[in-house]
Amino acid sequence: MKKTMLILSILLMVALLSAIEFEISGENRTRAAMANDSAENDGGWVDNRLNLGFDASLHPDLAFRFAIEVGNTVWGNGGGGISTGESIHVTEAFLNYRLNALDANISIGQLYWMDKMGLILDDYFSGVLLQKEDFAGFNTEFAWIKAMEGNPYNDDDYNIFMAHANMADVAPAGLYAFFGNIPNADFSNLTLYPYISLEMDMINLDLAAFMDMQMVMMTPKWALAALLKAP
Image (tube, rainbow, N blue to C red; front, side, top):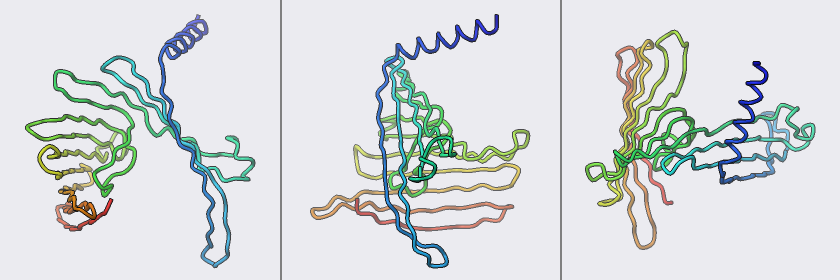
């Protein structure tokens, strides 16, 4: 009976997936590298990495994205077959739901996110992202990022909370605020990250400031930085 139910469940899943239309996107990057080691021995290799993304609309207000990354696969490494231990990573797996009552979108799962200049985060993370346009005149984002899962039975997880407000309709400027915390390690950090984009005749400039305060065992540490970028 259990085997029958398992087979029926698999068939039902296949039938449901076959009824969903997926949009497939991807990128295959191949590169040749030349380098030397610490002993100044010259060398080189060729490798490639494949990214594949699958997007589907499950409902007018519900979308799904799944993405995988294969590689880097070094050419000549046993033919690059999966059996040689080449890495396969699920990089994205999330649902995006339109909250019509709030006029906002919420994404839950593993997703990609990048701040304005890639200064703090330009990577994948697990968590929740809420995006809302025209919130008191601002375009906003709010996120809970699960940066580290410690002992499941100890209060040592590293959680980051992010808020972002952008005045795109008024001025090309905005502000990020991040708060991270590991409760039982007595560690927390607060980061403020304002930015502005300047459009001129000959060049466009992005300016950002970075202000971070860390509290370790009740001892504060400060860091300041600035970034200038010409896109």
